Length: 243
Ligand code: NAP
Image (tube, helix red, strand yellow):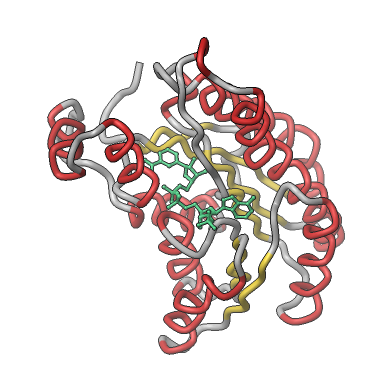
């Protein structure tokens, strides 16, 4: 589970542990994973804190070695680590473009490539990738929208290539989820997080914003045996239709 120290990743790590999985709580800073690992352990589950940058080939290789040794062969992968570097196209720097591509796309590629060998050996596996409603286009997010649309093509291709080996791959495209990421967006836009959420809720069919557990529940289903005939799909978890 990448990007698991907080937000959607933390909620999903806790949920997968409740479902009975031993969970590698992977994030940039290993010490930041401690509270999630402690919560899982206190509830009777198994978890391991792993510090790694998903965009680093060496970090990913080392992380998989540790996880395989300490928890067993990883057969479920959730590519959730993400960043935003928002700006309008004419003001966007090359660094901000590259940073977003790197974490989302290079990160998901490196993690999936490392995971697939364990999954193919086990003849069973589940990959869930975090896309976003921003994949459909979002002002100020040309880098993030491109990366999240890229995650959808990446997911469909994984589904085609790995399906014969018992591995499914699906993407979840969340709408507005209340996390540090959306709080940071509110701050950048100069509005309070409360006002930002009220506005987002009013624009959502079910009249509320999402919470990390909305995504955790969807991941839980997609990695379950009930979802074994679902692959290459993009599930919009956004409180309404999105386009
Ligand atoms: P978040 O609260 O900002 O958490 C993201 C986590 O990813 C952080 O712990 C971050 O670590 C970690 N991370 C960043 N770069 C990394 C790297 N190179 N290697 C390993 N970990 C890294 O974000 P969130 O809102 O939970 O979002 C989770 C995912 O859902 C992201 O892919 C996001 O794009 C997607 N999503 C979110 C929303 C939303 O409304 N919140 C909507 C659609 C899609 P640091 O804290 O050290 O930076």
